[in-house]
Length: 119
Image (cartoon, rainbow, N blue to C red; front, side, top):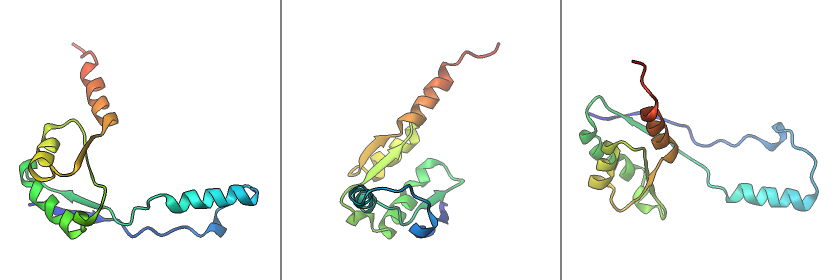
């Protein structure tokens, strides 16, 4: 059975007074502040883990997504590497969410597979 392994704390911004910043003119500083405010901030991170196989992980993932109210989010993505089990979870449980391949992880798998073996 899958369980929540850990949850990160809410995002706590560091006070600006504790960060040394180079001197900027007021318009450049205003632009930088506007960009910081527009950037999304992660509020919570959840990690699910299981000793069971991946077939049993879909339902706990659905429950956690509902608990986090992800059905109310406008833009959602399911990120997975090249493992077929991840895409089976997406196909069986999250088909309405945009699937995105974690390209760097998949590339790492391919590079590892392409390395010559020492015989």
